[in-house]
Length: 300
Image 1 (cartoon, rainbow, N blue to C red):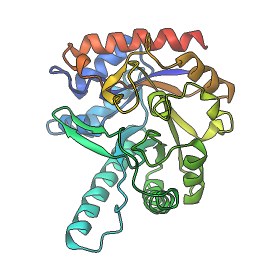
Image 2: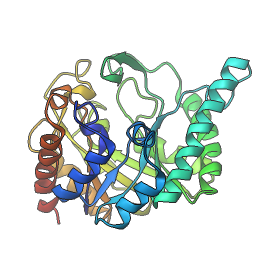
Image 3: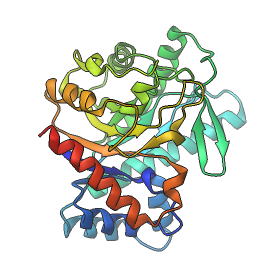
Image 4: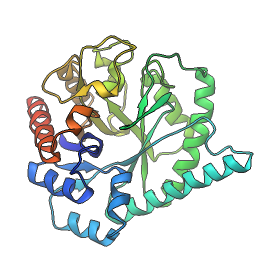
């Protein structure tokens, strides 16, 4: 499997930047980087897509799965002026992402299911101590409707969507069965899954990743790896994620089950821990690689 770095892991570091992340990830030994669009957008204020292409042309590391975007139930169904403006803003950003992805040779874009969220100074975080308000059928209806439209647009650029289910109490998609039902419901081929260890674990603190056994390996676009603190449900949140060398999640079980279905793609570390944001980004990327590589190599 390939070892990847999701930029959210160090996005809050004071000295982090798109250019610096690329150089440090190349130096550390990562095979792929999952680009955060907000980081790339800041870089493009003074640079060009040509500069990004030039970097990847002259280095070993490759881009994989730009992102991401959380869908909302009302996306692309607006009937008021304000809603239509929000839909237009969404499509403008999404088309820009697809165009850039095509230009830099990154054929994937990350889309996350609807999750109840709250704002913090570090950004938006998932609400995991409240029941999700929509029914399963309602979730299927709006998810399929939105993803069908995004798949149609992405196909024009040779881009596929990586659909990431956040399976906790405040998330809209609770099971792999439901996630695949939504994917199949789009009728499009350019959509697959992003499997995240934390986002599966928070569904009842589940450490049995044999839930992957019926998934077709060719429908898994990327996997996100992380561990977490041993906190009770209702307290546990994305801010409790940590590197792969310790924690409550059985990552060997996660990796074993990925391997058992024939998955050989990227395993990207994604940690959103405020503690790490106080570190120099060089330390974050170095530790992210060391701890992830140790885990992945145990399962090569």
